[in-house]
Image 1 (cartoon, rainbow, N blue to C red):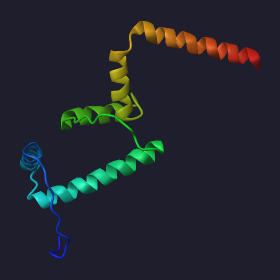
Image 2 (image 1 turned 30 degrees about the vertical axis):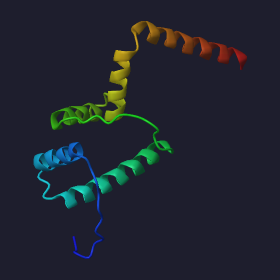
Image 3 (image 1 turned 90 degrees about the horizontal axis):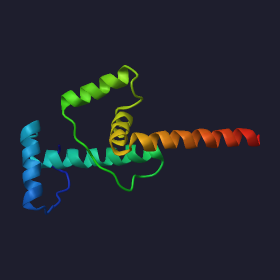
Image 4 (image 1 turned 60 degrees about the horizontal axis):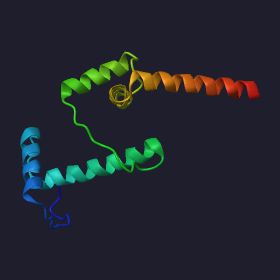
Length: 122
């Protein structure tokens, strides 16, 4: 980057510094300025994609970090047509753990009954 950039001061706690240093070391990032510039770009891109996919920014949520092997497995499932997207597969997997089989069966019955009643009204 050119030396004519604007210099800013940023205060962070020791936990954030350690987190940043560990990440930089693990990923071969040369210096803090490069890290912070990349983080800013990544955050902005994440927020743009977040609103692009849903039309509104997400109010809450979690970020889950997968290792390369796990990401490749998810990508392969998508390529095989097991799921539409990696995110959809993860979301469904979590719901499968959280929602009992009885509740799923009940929801399916209710949906079918609602569809039947709607068809009868036409």
